Amino acid sequence: MAFMIPWQNAPEFQFEISLDGTVYVLRMQWNNTAGSWAMDVYSREMLPLSLGARLVFGVPVPHGPANLMPPGIFVPFGEEPNYQTMVGGTARLIYLTGAEVDAL
Image (cartoon, rainbow, N blue to C red):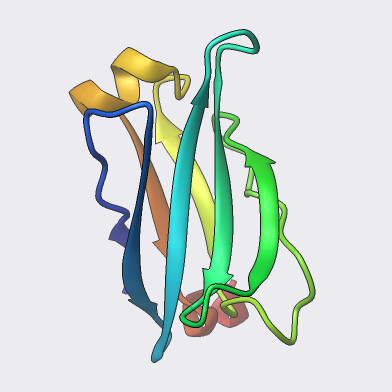
């Protein structure tokens, strides 16, 4: 089932999360100059899998090699994902599992 990725009130943060049965580390970074969030995905061992993917409203987040990444997709929804909307919760980042993506 799709679920919301937790968000913190900080310009940069990271956390471990289990996606489709595998633990990954997600790092979120606010780029004040560009006015956008970027997401990095690492293995649990901190090997970079996808770096600097920009969050854009309604657009699935691009990512690295399919055999290393979670099988699902990340999609920003709600309002345009700027600093205030993500922290305030009117914009969210959701993860659709691999099974949900396959069913589309």
